[in-house]
Length: 400
Image (cartoon, rainbow, N blue to C red; front, side, top):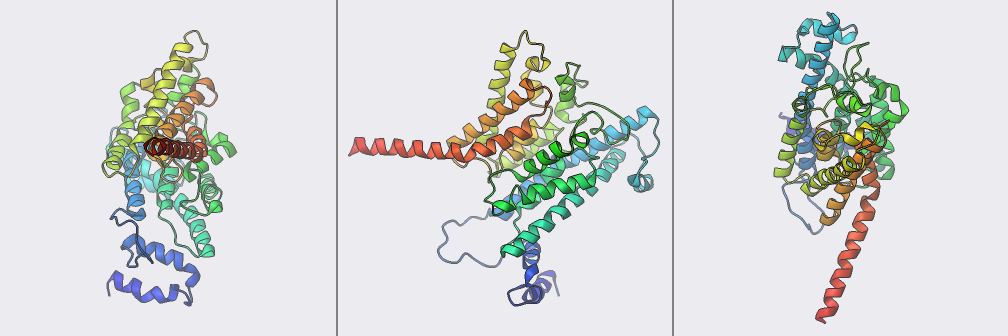
């Protein structure tokens, strides 16, 4: 019996009246992840398209692994560099047992760097995924609806915006908060007005600031401190890296946010497949550019060093690129109208620059800027729609 036949044979146990009917959302999630659903829409279908929600979410999920795999390599690279500089020969925790069997700690070896980084990425992603999917299935079973594929995207994006060695229990707490408070309490996928991954990250940042900020969390070596370029800039120190290093991603930072190049490759895939909105991406970049250039002019005599940070640095450090491509373009929490997407994107870029520059105590502003944009997205769309209605009424009255 093949896999399709096996799934069909056990289906009656999970369907209504079966012994395991409360676990139907789990069965349905596995079945539709492996095969295209065999059922059709009841009643007239308004749209026929091969690109359904599952295909969209799986494509975004796969694209997230482009910066994710590079980020895993970079985590290992930064850790191996720190170990070589400090004379440390092995990892002094449970990961060291497995790493000593599989690799050494040579920062010039791509294999050593990748395996070392995956030792942080894989456990973190597993904990995030299992913790979050449990509550997804719990809510789906209680409400009698399917498990949505959106969690695949939420789980990987949340993982990639965390420091590599964040305590696993904190990561689990954050994703549970993001799934339950950021999405499920509003009705689940399609009804939430906040990005769940950003909601989860904001919660753990403010709940556990010592584990999510500072100089000791960005390199996965106990006792080793190194600030990110954005952190250095906020206190007026040299960035510590070359611009090309920041663009390529060989700098300390969150798991998947460091490589602007890898993020741009993922963005190209999403844009070619018409999954992400180019208007939102362009709006974010233009909003950031206009605000930074204005602040550069206004802050010529300011004692705040962030006023003088040039635009080309803002674009490649911190979470700006990752947030622009993967977070701001979330189709649920973003604006839906074309004109609204420009305004929504520009608002996020404006707020990110404003938070970074005017509040140097919080140099990374992309996460809060996106959540701020999420709050205003429905209002933006409302005024855009009302403007369209008003314009059409005026046109109709002139032709009557």
